[in-house]
Amino acid sequence: MDNHTEFTQIYLKPGGIYISEKPALVSTLLGSCVSVTMFNPRLKTGAICHGLLPSCRGKKPCEKFCHEGIRFVDCSIMRMLGWFGQNGVARGEIEVKVFGGSDMIVGGDMTSKATVGQQNISMAFHILGKEMLRIAASDVGGSRGRKIIFSTLSGEVLLKHLRKSETDYL
Image (cartoon, rainbow, N blue to C red; front, side, top):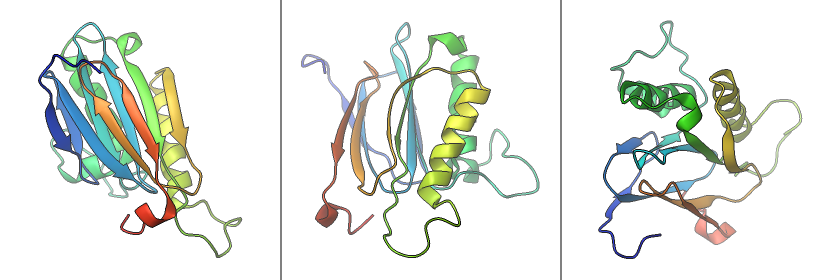
């Protein structure tokens, strides 16, 4: 990451989204949640979401100004894509990365139903595929949480897999 640029430090809470045209380092902690980062090199603009659940179960699909929608993987991805589109960025110009979706709870019958982490991963890849976006990198699944730091200036993501003792509060 650039050592000569002033970066705003942001902590992205679960269910949040952050879009910036200014240099920022956005950190978040992930368990079963999924973060999708989007970056446009031409504009040096980045976006990141921290989706709690795969999709909104409401009768109406999430609308543009729905504040609850960003809690969901599908709605937050579409919100970020909408912002890029409104700013003249074509889908082919967006670098996408996906992180998280761990199975944090061990035990029980894991074979009969997909876990929340698995559902979040599946939804992220489904929406990104449907929107014909190429995924540049991903680190998903497993049983350990993650800490990521996303640079909105470069699109770079630093990743740390957390030890069990570090994930007790996720």
